[in-house]
Image (cartoon, rainbow, N blue to C red; front, top):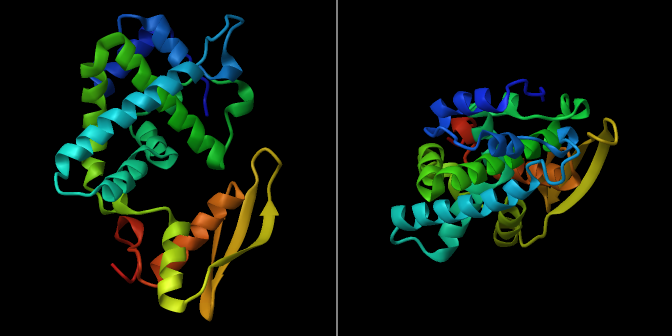
Length: 243
């Protein structure tokens, strides 16, 4: 992750095309895109508090969006769709789409992070940007931004996916009267950015393998691999034989 070199006014102008809003309080915007590793001696001059507020604003707007778009959907379906749209992976993808990473101020130690930490940094910064939009332009500014980037994703088939470990467990119980078991095959990389490899087994079904920056992430990837291979889920982006 590169450290941003834009001053507060340049940052505000650079964000107009993607947010549709010209920030009045440019210093507040700059604080909202400053990671704790790069903050000044001023207390609270990073995006942690903004992230807290942005998460709540995003959740409310997306929940209302889904409530309106799917008038016949039960609560369970709406919850699945909401979780898929506001998780770290979804937020990081949108942050990359709008070019946000290059605008984040971060310390040198975070410029080359990878894996889950890289995803979380982008997700947190996007939530902070939403908070800055809300504080500077009110709910109309925040809602317009969220509608622009989240609404197209709200109708995506992947938005209906549940947590893969939960889905695999239910499928395994129904299909094989068994419970999935997970085994760590290996761990590589430095302590600050590890990569775990995990195998999942279900009765006599061929095992599946996944990797990730944490044990849980690797387990989820392994569960996803089995669900896709067994035809329970379609591969993302239309890939896979079960498409």
